[in-house]
Image 1 (cartoon, helix red, strand yellow):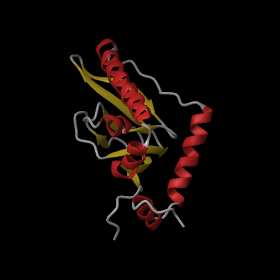
Image 2 (image 1 turned 60 degrees about the vertical axis):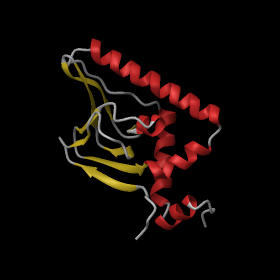
Image 3 (image 1 turned 180 degrees about the horizontal axis):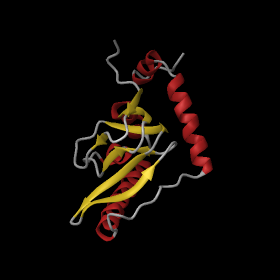
Length: 165
């Protein structure tokens, strides 16, 4: 059995809570099929930030800024995702130029602030899908294919700094 964490398929039933706001974070997800709802707590109760469908990802902010989950994610229908352990991605982020990491952290900080501001002004009944453009969707589908085609042994080789076969 592999000691190094590898991506894996995860399925969530409609209504299943995938993650809760303020939880510790260890994974991010790419949605292959289905839909999830993003909720943020506010003084008024849970507020809908949006719905995410195939090609979108969630759980990525904690990867960049090492903070707790910023929202609760619930499967709105049966949903299939690729779960990416943070350890798998951490080395790539840390090997990036320091200015790239700084930009990512600034963007996440701004996004967290925007989500909080939105939750304080949005009524709980407001809704809306979070759109994804065609180019991003094509890229995400390619990433999903590549993740599915990479074997556990290749992930271990990459983690050890060796090139894949």
